[in-house]
Length: 99
Image 1 (tube, rainbow, N blue to C red):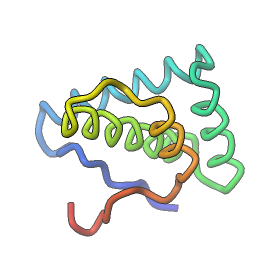
Image 2 (image 1 turned 90 degrees about the vertical axis):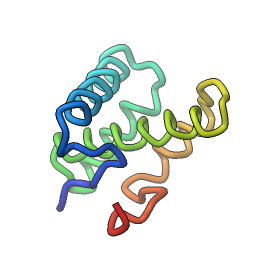
Image 3 (image 1 turned 45 degrees about the horizontal axis):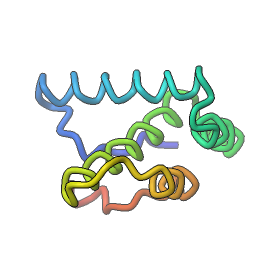
Image 4 (image 1 turned 45 degrees about the vertical axis):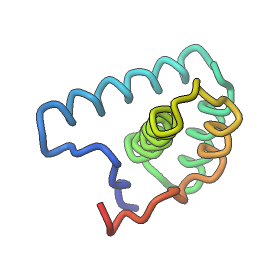
């Protein structure tokens, strides 16, 4: 299995720090089981054969997409949209080859 490519430019220091912060947010969601779909998605991806690290990258990519959508539409966090992004994984809502 390959690691998904993020919308965040991890070739820059700012991008690496941003991705690390989002990954920590996902880890907190898993630890706190809030929302429960985060932990369930991690477990599902691992059961599909992803490593924990790769599954965590997928989850972080989904959170990044939700944040981009929030900013693009100038709206608050949408829990239903985020859950939909997680449930669709490992499919990503963008073409990795265009990043």
